[in-house]
Amino acid sequence: MVHAQNPKTHGNPPVSLIKPVFIGAGIGLILISFFVFGVEGRAEWGNLWRIRPLIITPLAGATGGAFYYFMDQLRYRNGVNPTIALIISILVFIVGLWMGIVLGLNGTMWN
Image (tube, rainbow, N blue to C red; front, side, top):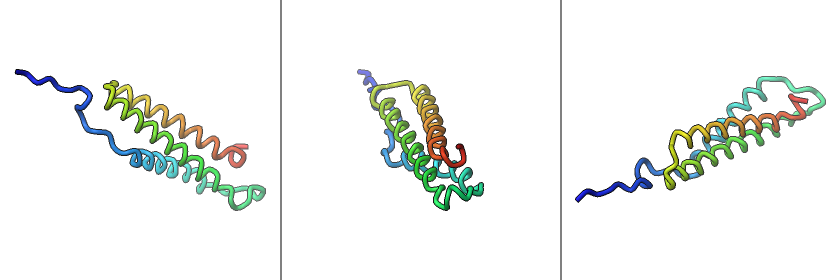
Protein backbone atom coordinates (compact mmCIF):
# COMPACT_ATOMS: atom_id res chain seq x y z
CA MET A 1 0.00 0.00 0.00
CA VAL A 2 1.41 3.37 -1.01
CA HIS A 3 0.74 6.40 1.13
CA ALA A 4 0.04 9.55 -0.84
CA GLN A 5 1.63 12.75 0.34
CA ASN A 6 -0.66 15.55 1.27
CA PRO A 7 0.50 18.46 -0.93
CA LYS A 8 -0.84 21.04 1.49
CA THR A 9 1.48 20.01 4.31
CA HIS A 10 4.85 19.57 2.59
CA GLY A 11 7.68 22.01 3.13
CA ASN A 12 8.43 24.21 6.07
CA PRO A 13 5.52 25.67 7.98
CA PRO A 14 5.18 29.44 7.67
CA VAL A 15 6.66 31.71 10.32
CA SER A 16 4.62 33.94 12.59
CA LEU A 17 3.35 37.34 11.41
CA ILE A 18 5.63 39.27 13.77
CA LYS A 19 8.91 38.21 12.15
CA PRO A 20 8.31 39.43 8.55
CA VAL A 21 6.63 42.61 9.83
CA PHE A 22 9.66 43.52 11.96
CA ILE A 23 12.07 42.60 9.17
CA GLY A 24 10.16 44.79 6.70
CA ALA A 25 10.01 47.68 9.17
CA GLY A 26 13.74 47.32 9.89
CA ILE A 27 14.60 47.42 6.19
CA GLY A 28 12.44 50.52 5.78
CA LEU A 29 14.03 52.22 8.79
CA ILE A 30 17.56 51.50 7.60
CA LEU A 31 16.79 52.67 4.07
CA ILE A 32 15.14 55.94 5.10
CA SER A 33 17.90 56.62 7.62
CA PHE A 34 20.38 57.02 4.75
CA PHE A 35 18.18 59.74 3.26
CA VAL A 36 17.21 61.51 6.47
CA PHE A 37 20.43 61.55 8.47
CA GLY A 38 22.66 62.18 5.49
CA VAL A 39 21.38 65.70 4.74
CA GLU A 40 21.02 69.01 6.49
CA GLY A 41 17.47 70.27 6.72
CA ARG A 42 16.36 73.73 5.72
CA ALA A 43 15.65 76.29 8.41
CA GLU A 44 11.96 76.57 7.45
CA TRP A 45 11.43 72.85 8.02
CA GLY A 46 12.21 73.04 11.71
CA ASN A 47 14.11 70.51 13.80
CA LEU A 48 11.45 67.79 13.77
CA TRP A 49 11.13 67.29 10.01
CA ARG A 50 12.77 63.85 10.31
CA ILE A 51 9.94 62.35 12.35
CA ARG A 52 7.48 61.96 9.48
CA PRO A 53 9.74 59.91 7.17
CA LEU A 54 11.03 57.86 10.11
CA ILE A 55 7.45 56.82 10.94
CA ILE A 56 5.83 56.42 7.52
CA THR A 57 8.57 54.45 5.76
CA PRO A 58 8.92 51.70 8.41
CA LEU A 59 5.12 51.40 8.44
CA ALA A 60 5.20 50.84 4.68
CA GLY A 61 7.96 48.26 5.13
CA ALA A 62 5.94 46.52 7.85
CA THR A 63 2.95 46.40 5.52
CA GLY A 64 5.14 44.81 2.85
CA GLY A 65 6.31 42.25 5.41
CA ALA A 66 2.72 41.48 6.33
CA PHE A 67 1.92 40.98 2.64
CA TYR A 68 4.80 38.51 2.44
CA TYR A 69 3.36 36.64 5.42
CA PHE A 70 -0.08 36.39 3.81
CA MET A 71 1.40 35.24 0.50
CA ASP A 72 3.41 32.62 2.41
CA GLN A 73 0.22 31.45 4.09
CA LEU A 74 -1.47 31.23 0.70
CA ARG A 75 1.43 29.24 -0.69
CA TYR A 76 1.52 26.88 2.24
CA ARG A 77 -2.21 26.21 2.55
CA ASN A 78 -3.42 26.40 -1.05
CA GLY A 79 -0.40 25.11 -2.91
CA VAL A 80 0.40 28.29 -4.84
CA ASN A 81 3.70 28.12 -6.72
CA PRO A 82 6.38 29.29 -4.24
CA THR A 83 8.40 31.11 -6.89
CA ILE A 84 5.43 33.14 -8.05
CA ALA A 85 4.44 33.95 -4.47
CA LEU A 86 7.99 35.11 -3.67
CA ILE A 87 8.26 37.28 -6.79
CA ILE A 88 4.89 38.93 -6.14
CA SER A 89 5.83 39.50 -2.50
CA ILE A 90 9.13 41.14 -3.42
CA LEU A 91 7.51 43.37 -6.03
CA VAL A 92 4.77 44.49 -3.64
CA PHE A 93 7.38 45.12 -0.92
CA ILE A 94 9.56 47.25 -3.22
CA VAL A 95 6.65 49.29 -4.56
CA GLY A 96 5.20 49.76 -1.07
CA LEU A 97 8.55 50.82 0.33
CA TRP A 98 9.04 53.26 -2.54
CA MET A 99 5.61 54.76 -1.89
CA GLY A 100 6.42 55.03 1.83
CA ILE A 101 9.64 56.88 1.05
CA VAL A 102 7.82 59.28 -1.28
CA LEU A 103 5.05 59.93 1.24
CA GLY A 104 7.52 60.35 4.07
CA LEU A 105 9.75 62.81 2.25
CA ASN A 106 6.95 64.73 0.53
CA GLY A 107 6.97 68.34 1.66
CA THR A 108 10.49 68.28 3.02
CA MET A 109 13.19 66.92 0.75
CA TRP A 110 10.80 66.55 -2.20
CA ASN A 111 8.85 69.75 -2.40
